Image (cartoon, rainbow, N blue to C red; front, side):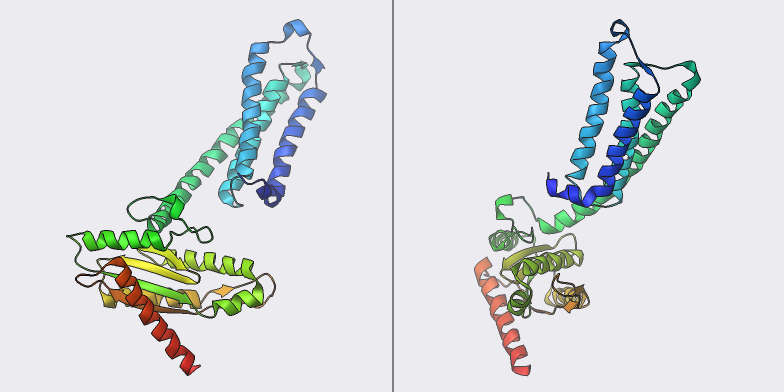
Length: 304
């Protein structure tokens, strides 16, 4: 739950408040208060619970989800349902004349519209979760160990990758696998120019782009600083290089827009690839790919 998200949902929050206010205004303003003996307190308990829970659901959606069509549809559907539930609650206290029988129609229709809207929202939510689950599979390999998650990128850390590499090395059915180390060029310069907060934002965006270009069997982790490490099971050197090149091109074509400038920044990567050899350990494989990456970066600096 993130209360600060409410500031990003001002319109939806206003819609929910308007639904609550309008239902109370119509219900109370068009009738007369019932005698105390005619009030059914059991009905009030049931209908009041529905109205109150609808209000709570709206609040928790707005403080739990970012803006988007799913959030909008859920809030609008619940606001319609809240309108009907509130009118239903108020009429337990209020007596209406026959001349305003149209109010009962107004009471019923929004609930049906709200249920249809929420059904659409839940379907879209389901589709959203399918996509997120695919992304999660790329973030996690064989098990979840959330204390090893990097706070900035939400990828797993280098220690998690070492464990996964050792698991691959011990897998007798594994024929071959490759690791790729990625390094963001001139990341220190980016941090000095735009600040560490924008640097963290860049790391998050790049990690998301990396995940978008991985297969469901692959794993991406943050290695250290501006470096990422990728694990490609059942992948030879040529295919690993091809995937790494695709990732490099995808990131180089994305315009990053730091808050301090209107000018876009295009970021480049350097990468190195190594395949596992007989007798390898996780640390030796990582040291080998790290040395190869350093050689590539030194070669780039000589040509600049």
